[in-house]
Image 1 (cartoon, rainbow, N blue to C red):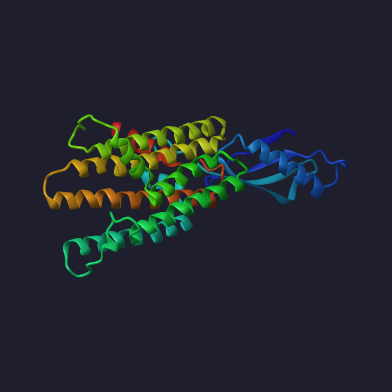
Image 2: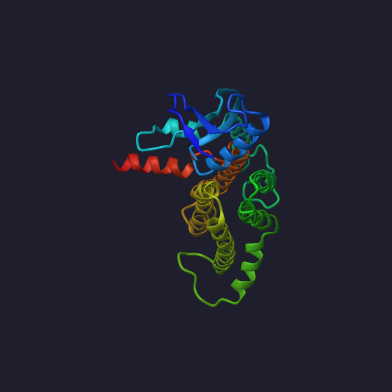
Length: 317
């Protein structure tokens, strides 16, 4: 079915017409013809990621044409400002959800500081580093929400590739709740005889080995899904990789620095807050991003990876 796109207006809207060829040349298009045209048009729009929404108008522009209202999203380029990038990426409901997620994170960081530095609380369950403490239980809840939302997005977009990322966060939940890398790493450390570098322990090397092995398996699943996924899934995977790398930075790099540090309790406290607090904040960002996926259109063209490219391009020029 031939398609024609009329010039866009400055607000990102356009009129796109699909030839309906009604059986009676002088008669307007029937609802069935509009339905067939809409289906064909949406299939065609799947290759045009800049177009977000399309819906047929009730009126017709002529005896042979059905008019569609199309809403587009502008591509981000070097001239796009940082604020425009953020507006293109985000949704109002997702912004509110992120604020609600960050408030408990900041509250737990504050309570941990009060409990550690003052005698007022004297309750270790407020500690960021305590297993089964209040902050860690909140982390479990976030991982669970992420898994549920990824399953929902997979059903919504009729693509099982999103389940690959769901398995990644399922491992994160199980690892936090069951202490997988600590327990398995302890057994591995018992069979090691080498001297750990950088002031680390054999236990740390065992934990790194377990995390590396699990990471390779999960990355293999994500790569397979990436190769077989849609363009929207590939862009989402690039964004998710950035967020997971941020999580790895706090959970592995800062953790190793925290363990090997011998600069006194003040530095130890600061590194502990950066490590555990950073993990909590990144987990909230991941949950915000997955929630954003569930409420915005699949054909959206603004992603975090594009925002990072714009920022890096601006700094290099």
